[in-house]
Image (cartoon, rainbow over all chains, first blue to last red; front, side, top):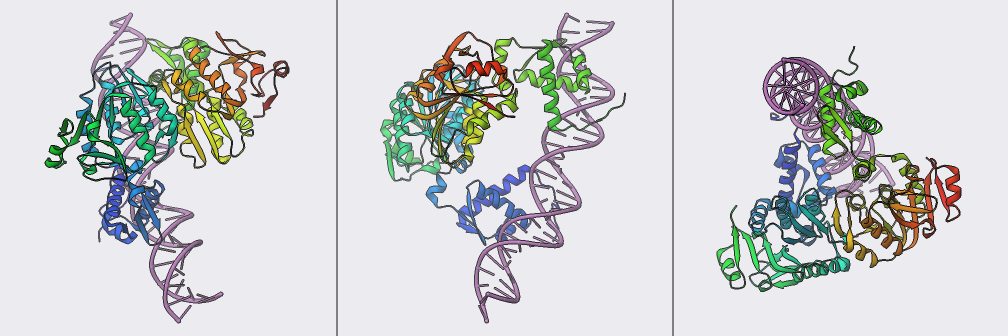
Length: 264
Length: 264
DNA sequence: GAAATTAACACGAACACTGTTATTTGTCAC
DNA sequence: GTGACAAATAACAGTGTTCGTGTTAATTTC
C-alpha cells in the first residue's frame, strides 16, 4: 500500500483522529489496537501514543490487547468529555440564552458546558455581574473588562472542574441574581435529574437565589431519567433546547414553561 | 558589526531579553527604542515587538519615542510583575516553609507569589487539605491527587488574580486550619503593611482562622512601610526570610517571634 | 518632511507528530 | 517453570508546522 502521508502530521489532524478513536471506542465499547490502525490509517505506534494520551486524560481505559470505554456513569460525568460533545447544539442554545441577558444584570452560571458557552458570550453584552462555581467559566470571564466576576468557592471537584459542597451552597445563599443559567445531565418532560446529590444541592441553591431560572438542555439529554430528581420543570422559568428535540417532547414541556428552540 | 545570531531565536532568550528590558526601564524610569536596541543587540523591529507585548501585559507604558515604567504603586501591585521578581528568594523561602507542613494537615494560602511557591511543593508532602483564594494556586493544586482543595471564593480581582471582599472573608471564617502561609507587600521589624484595605481584611481573617500563622517575606520587602498596617509581627507564629535580609533586622524581629533564614 | 511606528514578507531554528526498527514485557501452551 | 509468540514500549530519524527574527516597504505622527 502507498502511504498518503508519509510523516509529519499537524496537531489538528491529530486531535481529529483522537476524537474519531474516542467515538469509535465508545460506540463499540472496546477496540483492539490493530482495529484502530485499520480505522485511522496511521501506524500502530501512533495508535498506541493516542491511546496513552486518551487514557491519561481519563477518556478511555487501556488494557493489554486494546482499550475500552469507561463505565457509562463515570464516563458521562467526565468533564473533559462533556465539553467536547454536541458543541454546535450547546453553542446554539447559548446564543439563544444570551439574548435574555441585558446590560446591568446579575447572572449566575452553574458548572455545565452549556453555561460555559453562555459565559463566552457575556463579555460582549455590556456591564454585568456574573457569579459561578465553574473554574472554566472563571477563566473565560476573568479577562472581561466590563464583567464583575464572583467566584462561588467551595470544595474543588476534579471530575466537574468546579467548586461544590456546603461552602459553595452558603456562598450562593449570600446572593440574589436576576437570572440563573443551569443545565443538568438529563430530563424528561416533567422533571430534571442528576446522578450526584452533591451537585443537586448546589443547583437547587442557585435556583433559589435567582429571580428567573433558565434551563439549558441539548437534545442528547432527553428524554432520559437519572437516579436523583433535581427539580420539576415547572420550577424553571424558561427552557432553551436545540432543534434536535422531538416536537412532542417540546409540546409536553410547554405545558409547564415557555420553551425556546435554538436554531443551529 | 557582525550579527552573532542572524535569525531564529528561542522562546527562552526572548523571555530573558524582555526581562532585561523591563529591569532597565524600571531602573531608568523610561527608555527610547534605540537605547534598547543598543542594550539588547536585536533589531529595532524586535524591540518594538517586545515593547508591545510588555505594554499589553501591563508592565510598561508605551508612548511615541519610547517606553516608561508605570507609577510605582500601580506597578508594585501588578500581579504578573510580582510573580517574576525575586523568584529564587521566594523559592528558597517556600522550601523552608514547606518543611513545616506534615501529612494530614490543613493549610491556608493567601494570594501572594511566595505562597504560590509553597503551593507548588505541597503535592509531594502527602494527603493535605489546602484552602486558598488565589487562582494561580488553585491551578497549581487542582491536579494533585492527595490534596483536598478548597477555593475561598469572592469578588475577582484582576490585579491580584484572586478572590476577595466580604464573600471571601465569610468563606475564610467558616474554616479553621492548622497553618496559614501569608505574605504581604512590606514590613518593618515591628509591623506588617499593605496598601489595600480590602486585602488586609482578607489576610486578617485568614490569620484568625488558623492555629499557626507563618509570615513569608523576601528581603526586597523590608524594612519599608506602606499606607495601612496589617498586623504587628507578634501576631504571627513564625517568620521565614531569605539570606538577603540584614542581620540586625533579623535580630530585632526575633524579639517578637522565631525567624527562619532560608538558604538559597 | 523627517522620524517613529507598523505592516508584509522571508528565513531559520525549535518543536511536535509520525514511522521504522529494536528492545522489553506479558501471556499462553506445554 | 520455560519457551515462544504477541503486545507494548523505547529509541532514533525524518518531516511539517510554529515561532521568533530581520529586512524592506508602507503608514502614521509630530
